[in-house]
Image (cartoon, rainbow, N blue to C red):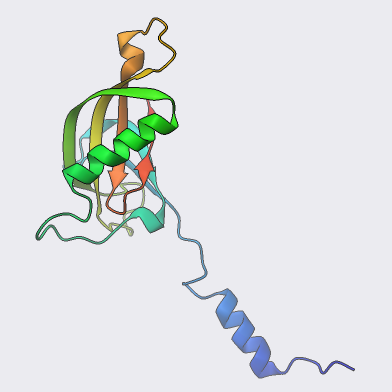
Length: 144
């Protein structure tokens, strides 16, 4: 015969289920630069991809790492990476929620990548944007 749960056990279970460690944090929606100016795209960063780094020393993900990550990303999508035309290591915020001003630092990349199918390629379709978080995650944006 099973014993009924005691008040203490119920309280422990309640606290564990409502713990901030178990609660899912909302993602960070990035659509503006730190100065408030609008980006052309919206990037959704999962909380685990937002790494604390205050800017001292080398970033956790260097330019060399970014090159490798973008090359692997292109390969995984059957694209040939032509060039990375700009790198921007930027700090910005999720401007939707004023109480959540945790800085989001990431590499914002403009690149040209063409499909490996050797068909005709529209130059505009080859232009792409990505963000690389400081934990190495690739964020594909939604662009206007």
